[in-house]
Length: 397
Image (tube, rainbow, N blue to C red; front, side):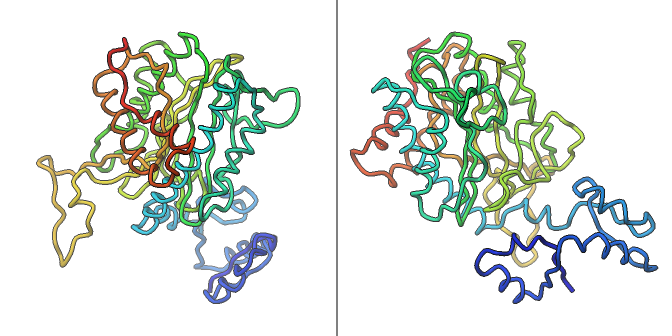
């Protein structure tokens, strides 16, 4: 028997109760779960499977040790590794999200850089959501938008509200925008940092090092059974070389039309998370750099994990054995889901290697290929996209 202990408010959406009933799920009030589990644990031979690291204390404390099975929820790794349909939905979500962001950033650049207007952080929030809302299958934002101008960009989980703290974007200050959408077929989460004037050398240097960190992770090829913390150093290498760092993890798992923050995997300096990266997982790649009272920089893409060899991504048929590399291992790589240009007009080219520049040009070529068909020829969004995806001018030092 399957019993769901749940707040009735969460079941008010059309069709939810009917779906649970058809699946044979009994629904009971959430406040009944603790006494039920406590009674269950009193019966000899009964077991309770719970992940104490993810459960509240009120629930875990009533379970006797003799019947406790403290282990990861069996559904967690199933959700983490997307099936073919889920991954295709994620890809589609990022294509329409890229089109929405082309409309949004082309509008924002025109307001600030061309017309010389100022735009409040709250208006930025409302406008980016409005652009996403026009896309097919949009449900809601995947988390509250972070739109931080200048020093507010250094507040990691800042949310703009009318008041003394709110700032206005102009040509003198950068803006960090971390936002995403929930679509019926997938979930997005992207961060870009924009500057529509002339940034300081300190800002440009930090921006370029953050970009190099993003490229460093994205470009990695690694053997299966590699925990995420092993890759974290590649996001920080260019920053560490200049005595710089950031105080958050580099990447988190993302659900397919589910939670924008989803375990169990991640890319983090905390080596205690030993969850290995697997084919079908989606993870964010978001190095950053923050100066309190001045600015914040973050560049975030979502990545899907796949095997390097395409034949390894196919399910074995009729008892076939998986092919291994000469070392006896299969190797994994990242593929970009996010399809939104990265501002490049103030990159310090002297810090960029040929490989870095090749990566950025290839990324923008992919963005243009995927997003251009969704935009109207001659529209401001199309003009902005084509300009933003032009190859780097490598003659600039």
